[in-house]
Length: 505
Image 1 (cartoon, rainbow, N blue to C red):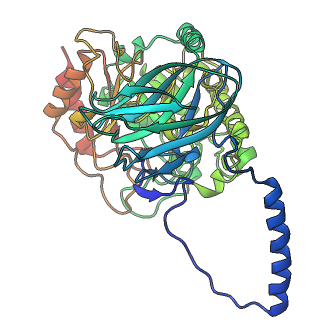
Image 2 (cartoon, helix red, strand yellow):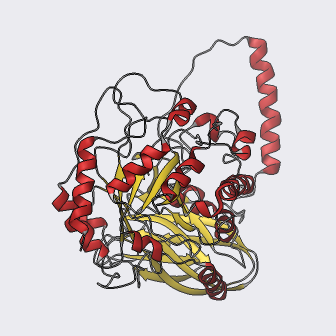
């Protein structure tokens, strides 16, 4: 997950403007003026009167959870939304005064009692938010450190239009505010029960010891010289040599990146071809990797990025349409096709940017999970929430994206020593714990004519941190830079051999 901190207005447009100069004839100006009068007249008819309760966000659903984010809100005071780039919805920050507010106009599908919660980052002692709906208010304390989901309470909401206002009524406003959620308690309980019945065991991850992740993508570079085209690199990738290497590293599973900055897939996929031809390859490298790794009893997961940084791809995904139904339908078709192709040979999916590209748009998480488990009901699912609380009950593993193994991102409070690896409480309650850390300089090797850099820590340091994690059932995953030919640096291989030996009983 990568993002910028460029500020934007609440529509998500960067706060800068471009200007053009032009010369226009008198007759052109006249025609333009007449056209403008027509447009203004139409707007007078079509624009709601001031004070009308025309919805500015999603309607509050009766049978599912509804999420509101700042993109659909009116912001007052110093509050601004973070611009995370195309296809991603960021949080709100810059809250300065009690008068600053976030306002949505919405409609409730059916009258009912709705639980109201917010995802936010605490500012410390005295942090509190106030939710007011049509003059009725309730508050939620947010003094606990870090990102959390805080509950304001349950409020009865009649059907029809409503105005929602979020302000701060404490000594400190939140440091960051991501979302406001509405769900009927009965619906929340039902969804949790359904998800629990479908949840596969994560014991094989714990038994595997640790995994390795490889960002091998269309941007991967060789040790020296020009890079091959993506499908040529797929064709020449030595799957058996790669599997032997992973076995020597001591890892029990691999998370292999299929799409990252550029959206490509290392094998056939007719759904991807229907969206944008030229983004798949004749050789089925995924199948070959699954078979080669399987010879060593090493499982394979696939990492999938939405592809929002790849403009030609992204423009064809229907994401830019106001209604995201077509986008999520395409997502389900594509992911189900991958699952169908590899069946039980594919042990898991690791979906990146789920907090910022999926969650804000109220998908059916149950339907996403069903698509992702096509061909293997025991397939483990990770919807990466970065360091935000879990997004739904319909996945299994907390991604634990940590980059450099920063202590502030670790949360062992709800992972008792000798536990089963699932969080017993807190923001990730119920999920299998995973910690993902970078070994070398970057997530992948994207620098031309440069060798892979040395590991960031010694083998002893890695072993110490990994033992600490594994004592609570948390599963370490180490991201390793990899050359385009599928090899890693000799120094990195020696590091993993030392790690393997250091973790032996």
